[in-house]
Length: 338
Ligand SMILES: Cc1cc2nc3c(=O)[nH]c(=O)nc-3n(C[C@H](O)[C@H](O)[C@H](O)COP(=O)(O)O)c2cc1C
View (cartoon, rainbow, N blue to C red):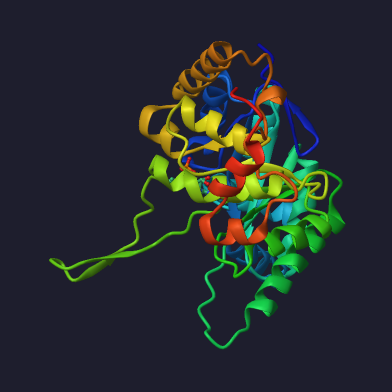
C-alpha cells in the first residue's frame, strides 16, 4: 500500500499530519507523534504578541547598557530557560528537527503586517521544513471593510514569503464573504499550501456563575463537512489552484481521513482526536486508512485523492444553492462505482 503524498512540495510517508496543538510542546511530544507514524508534525504556534514582547525586551536590555543581547542572556541563563516565548520555540524546533526523521513545520500566528513576520527566517534557520501561517483574526472593528482585511492577509503572506525559501502554507478562516476567491488570491500571491480551516476560540457564557469562559473545545467529526466542501471545490480547480491543500478539523476516525482524501486533500491533519486518545491514535487512523484502501481496491493515496472533488465545469448555480451534491451526482453519472 503506497501511502506517500506530496504536501507543500515535501514528500511525506503518509498524509496524516499532527496539526498544531500542545502535543508538540516538547521534543518528547514530537517524538511520540513521529513514533506513532504521522507523516509530519506542525508545532504549536508562536504568536505575534510573543515576538513583539521579545522585541520590546531586547530594546529595554539594549537601553540598560548590556553589550549585546546574546551576552546579556548568558548573564541571566535562568531567564532564558524560563522563557516561554521565541527563544524556547527556536530551541524546541531545532531539537525536534534533530530528533525525528519526518518534516517539522513551524507555525507563526498573527494578524498584522508588522516586523514580527521577519521571524520566519529564524524558523527557517532553525530547521523548519515549512512554515504554517495562522492568520488568526476576528475583525472587532465593524467599520473596517472586508477588502482591507483580506488585503492585509495577502500582505502578511507576501512579507513572510519574501524572507524565506522554505514553503509557506496559510491556515485560513471560513469567515470570508468569498472563501474561494480569497483562497485563489493567496494561491496567486505564492502560498505553497492552504490549510482549511482555522478553528477560532469561541468564548461562552455560564449563566450560573455569570462568567465568560474561554475554553478551546475539541472538535466533533461533523465539523469536517465545511472544510471538506471547500477542499472539494478547490481541488476540482487544479491545476488552476497550485497550492497544496491541507485539511484540518473533525478527523476522529479513519473514515474521516478517507473523506478528506476523496475530497482532494494532500494532507489530513488531526489535533482533537490525538488530544482525546493520545498520540498512538495516529496508528489507528493509519491502519484504518490502509484497511479501507485495501477493501476498496486502492493501491495508493494518489488513486484516492480528489475522486470526489467538484468536477471542473460544474454549474456554479448548482454549487451555490445545493452545495455540490447535485452537481457531483450529475457529473459522475457514468463514472464509478468505486
Ligand atoms: C488545545 C488546542 C490547541 C491548539 N493550538 C493551536 C496552535 O497553537 N496553532 C494553530 O494553528 N492551531 C492550533 N489548534 C488548532 C488545531 O491545530 C486544529 O486546526 C483544530 O483543532 C482543528 O482540528 P481538529 O478537529 O483535528 O482538532 C489547537 C487546537 C487545540 C484543540
